[in-house]
Length: 348
Image 1: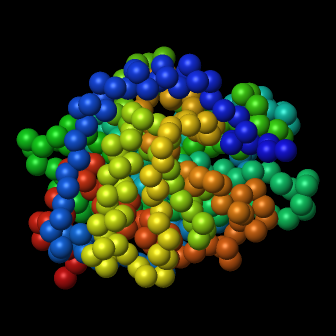
Image 2: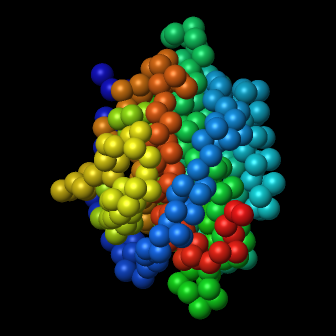
């Protein structure tokens, strides 16, 4: 019996209401489409360094990191340090909540590139890991769930740092838009997934931002989850962000046809899909229910290692991670109207 995300469908009426509330933002969203070869090579091949990615970003996260444990705090400090070193404004959203194992402390991390701007594009992951200590008596590293997504976010911020510093043109559609990262704590259930034993950090932050009227400044929430194995693939879950997903599909096709993706992984990553299920529960749900548009980049179907001890470094596909990262960097650059065609940021 499935004990987590996919078996718990979101109420259809809630889904329709969220889509309806988000149409105004989706209609006003524009993305750049950069085709200059040198610019795309810079965003893809020019920014690829998988050895450094593994050493600096992934390895420090790839440990058992159950909410409320010292290891969870170590990962939190690693994330905060990386983001602060890039000049982002970093905040903690700390709170306590009752769990099946007593009252526990949770800490979300919020990092903002340009906090003075009025609109936000949020990219998010969860940095905690599920507690399998009593079942397996082994450390569950949760590589895809979600060490790799969080590491990809850190590496994307690092590689796009110069472009983000220069920013978009003053008169562009991205001039008042900032990139904001949210690293959620407490996504995993301690026992069986229920409305009260799951997504602790997301539920708390969505309510907090709703109460202080910060949700209205979110243009879209892009949630990464279950990424890193050979079988990673995505479909579009919500009509309100279908244009963003279509842009990702278009980018993948264009980059692959122009030999800007590694040949080590040739399977299609972003797949067309005839309907919008919206039925996977994850950290986006409290925001979706409050009208925030969501692009849910979670491998669908789930990877074969999901919630198994084999969700570790040995079962990751470095070429898949590399290709996803290349596509995602170009996507974020287009979404924020950055200018990779200008030579000022390119490595000598």
